Image (cartoon, rainbow, N blue to C red; front, side, top):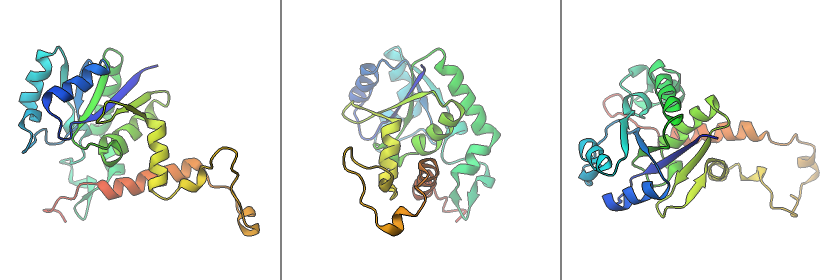
Length: 213
C-alpha cells in the first residue's frame, strides 16, 4: 500500500525539520505552498530549503502552482475567497494530483506546507481530500510536531468533532440515550457528515485575497 505523508514546517529549526523527515524515512518533499517563502524562517525559503534537503540526499519538488491554496486563476475565487471545490476542479490541480500519484510509485513523499496542525491546512482539507477520492486505498499519515503520526482516518474523526458532528461516534459499551422523537429519526449518514465537515473547515481556513474581496 502506498503511503503519503504530510508535514507543516511551523517554527521548526532546519535540523528539527530534517530530523522529522529522516525519522519517517521520507525520500522526497513536495512543497504545496503557493508562495514557498517564509519571512521569519528564511531556512524554509525555496532555494535554501532545496539546497539543505539535497545535502541530506532528499529530493525537493515544487507543486505550489498546481496544488497551492492561492491559485492565480480568478475563477477559483468568490468575493476574494478561494473556493476549494473550484480549485480542485481545475485542470492544473488535477495535473498536480497526477504528478503526486506518479511520484508515490517511486518515492516516499511528504507534502510540505507551513501550518503546524494538519487540520488547519489546505494540504489536508484540499489536497489529501482530493487525492483520497482518486485513490481510496492510499494510506495518508500526518507527521505532527513531536514526530508522532496521526492517520488520516483519525484526523477525519477529529474534523467531525470540531465541526459539530461528534454525535455520530459513541463510546464502546455506552449506547447513546435517545428520546422517542430522536429514535424515529433516520441515523446520520457518516459520509455526508464528513463531506459537510470538510466544506465547513475549508471555508474557515480558505485564503482571502484582499485585492479581490
